[in-house]
Amino acid sequence: MNATDRLTELFMRFPGIGPKQAKRFVYFLLREHSQYKEQLIKALEELKFTGKQCEKCYRFYGDKNAQTPKVFCSICENETRDHSELMIVEKELDLDAIEKTGSYNGLYFILGGLVPPLTEKPSELIRIRELTSRIHGAIESGMLSEVIFALPVTDYGDTTTEYIEKIIKQIVGIDKIKLSHLARGLSSGLEIEYVDRDTFKSALERRN
Ligand SMILES: [Zn+2]
Image 1 (tube, helix red, strand yellow):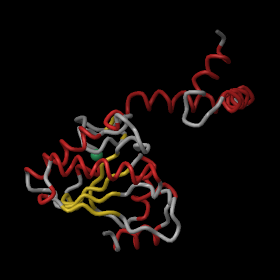
Image 2 (cartoon, rainbow, N blue to C red):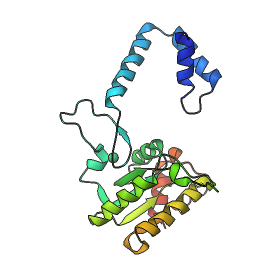
Image 3 (cartoon, rainbow, N blue to C red):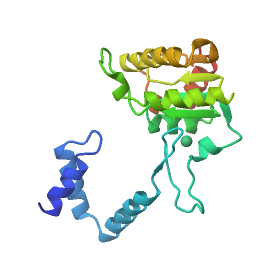
Image 4 (cartoon, protein in one colour):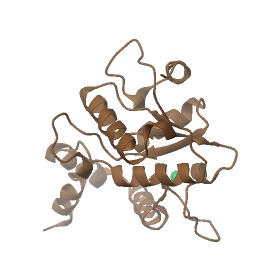
């Protein structure tokens, strides 16, 4: 296999990228100056060594210049954040979007997916074991008082919320923790990833 075909195959593993678009990327790179390609290679090299995943929230974070490698990301390690609130999001882009609004000061947990309705083995699709052990540990140490669901307002989001709530109630006990949900905005099908500051802020304030 030549470099062009190999690269096409690698691009096809990107989310949402089909063979045609993968090829388009390759042709773009072939046309680009070598300086751009050098930058890309360097950035990929760096990513290989700095892309660490936080063991608490599962967010990726850079650790390139740290003297001693950190186990947790800057959000989880931040003492000024409210450790009594844990917000559950589907993916990193959602966390980034919420951080950008500057309206939330608690901690996060990234599920890594959603549960489609009528799924037989939902536990294989999201980080449910990691989530329950995180919640369990945080309650034991008296840190956590509220779990906030910030999942998309879709069938998938609702199924996921119901499934997690059931598991939390079974494992942790309903009386030990408050479960709340972002208030539903005017438009259903809202993607957290694209939420604006005012919509998010109001949904957070009116959570129920
Ligand atoms: Zn973290």
